[in-house]
Image (cartoon, rainbow, N blue to C red; front, top):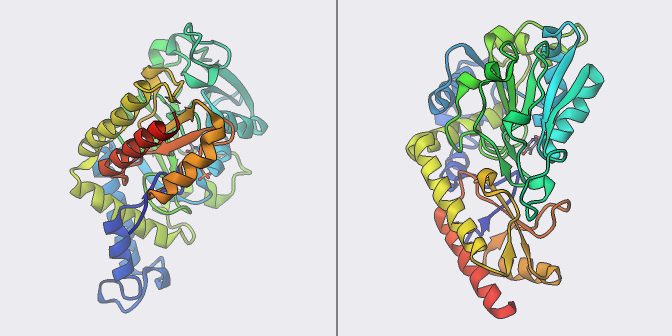
Length: 374
Ligand SMILES: *Cc1c(COP(=O)(O)O)cnc(C)c1O
C-alpha cells in the first residue's frame, strides 16, 4: 500500500494520474511511442501542449489577455527572469518587494543584481501586536506597504511554503498609490488550490512540483501588456515575449512534464475544478489546525488570519520526541513530515492531490502519539 505523502515538494500526485501515465508510458494513444520520444513539433505533442494550456486557462478562469508560458528552471529561475524581463518598465530600474518569509527573501536577494530593489514591507520590521506570534509567522498588512509609483513591479509570495504563511487577499495597488505598478506573485505552493483574482495581478508564476506535476516545468501567467521590456542581455529562451510568441515551444520544452501537468489538470477538472478542490482544502486544513489548537502537545504559531491551507508547520512540546514522532509516523504509513530546518518540528503539506482521509489518518496518529508520550 502507498503511504500518505505529506512532502512539501516535489509532492504527492493523484494516483489516477500516475496509473494513467504508467498505462500509456510506452505507447501513447496508439502512437506506438512514449510522449518522451516525440518531437516537440509533432502534431501529437502540439496537441498535448495546447490541451494542457486550455485546461489550465479554464481551471484558473484566466483572462484572455494573459499569456501562459511553460518554461524551465523552477521558480528560482523566475526570481532572476522577472527583473530581466520587467525591470525595463521602470526608467530608474526599480522594483519593490514584500518580504514574508524564506521564499520572498530569496526572490529579493536574487533580483538585487538587476536593479534598485527595495523592501516595501517586511514581516520582520513590523512585529505583530500579539507577542505569541513570531515575526516570521505573519504577513505585513497592506496599509504598511511603502510602494514607489515608478517601480516596474511589486513582488510577493502568496504562500510561504516553509513558514506556512498564506496571503491571497491581494490589494488593488491603485489604492496604495501605485496604479501603474503590476503585482507579481510567486504562487508555487498554492496555485490551483483556490481561486485567484487575476484582475489584481500582472503575473503569477509557479514551479510545477507542488500542485501541478513533476519538477522541471515552470508555469508563468503574464498579462500581455507586460511583455516586451526585456533587457538586451536576457537569453532568448528566458525572454517571456519570445516564449509567448513561440507558444512555449521556442526550444524543446519539458515535454513529459507538460504531458503530466495536462493529466493533473484533467484530474482536477474531474474533481469539480478549483472551487471544489478549495472546499476540500479548507476542510483538510481546518481539521488539522483545530486539532493542533486544541492540544497542549502540538503547536502552530502562525497568525490565524494567514495560516496556510497548503503547508502546516507544527512543533512538539518536547523536541526530543521529534525523531520518535517521525519514525512512528512512518511505521503508521505517514511519510515526509519532517519540518524545514529553519522552523524545526514537523510540517504537513496538504496539496490538492492529498485526500481528506490522509489528514484524518494524520490526526488519529497525532492523537495516539500524544496519548502515549504526552
Ligand atoms: C518550492 C518553491 C520555490 C522553489 O521552486 P524551485 O522550482 O525549486 O525553484 C519557490 N517559491 C516557493 C513559494 C516555493 O514553494
